[in-house]
Image 1 (cartoon, rainbow, N blue to C red):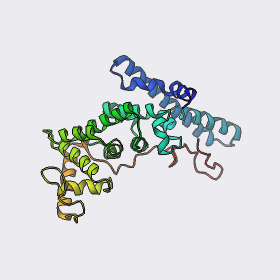
Image 2: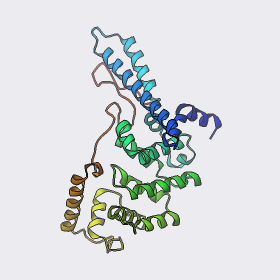
Image 3: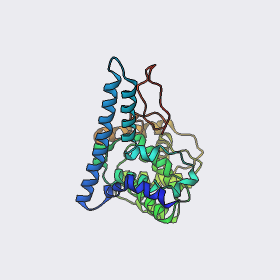
Image 4: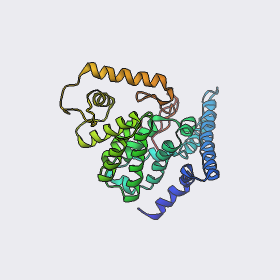
Length: 288
């Protein structure tokens, strides 16, 4: 990749590095920067919406306001990282890769802060799937392995199951050894999550979804694996596993398993680009 392209990413998002810094002051400044960028985007959108509702309407003023909003939106990390269409083979050398990784590390290391200020589960999911490709360089692979390990040790958060995709992409003896160690944890939830990921690694044909999570819970042996990956699911035991998960979620609402959460950015289209109000006079603009 050309140096200029890397420098462009550093210019736009270099401040994000401090979001995962141990330096409290630097971290606070980065969080303030994130909040400022988010506020600027929100205010630009509100200004545009106000102009759209004016009568009579000014096409030139409306377009100028729309461009201001679009420019502000593209300065947000999620927009900058998700508007580019990438082939899987291009991800390991992509200039935005360090910042996509930082965004996921921010959610993993500062979950309460991320939830309060940046929570869009669909953004987390899309970035995980973007990074779940083979061929990562050693430093990036090591950080992805660290993320998988961190996630299995904590209580489940929305879209955490997506990390199994990354586990498959960076699979190796070191990762399996860490997961095997987690299977001996004194925390049942950690044992279950680590065992489930190991099962998925050993059975790459198994889809990663809630159904197979409950299937694994209902059929697992003391060693953590179902008796037969091709056996019919026992619907009674699967129902028991789901009931137990719901009871745990009710007892610990902060640790609920909200994988069916449909929280998305209401100002974006399915491809991640912002959209104007869908009135006859306001056709959707092209994606960035």
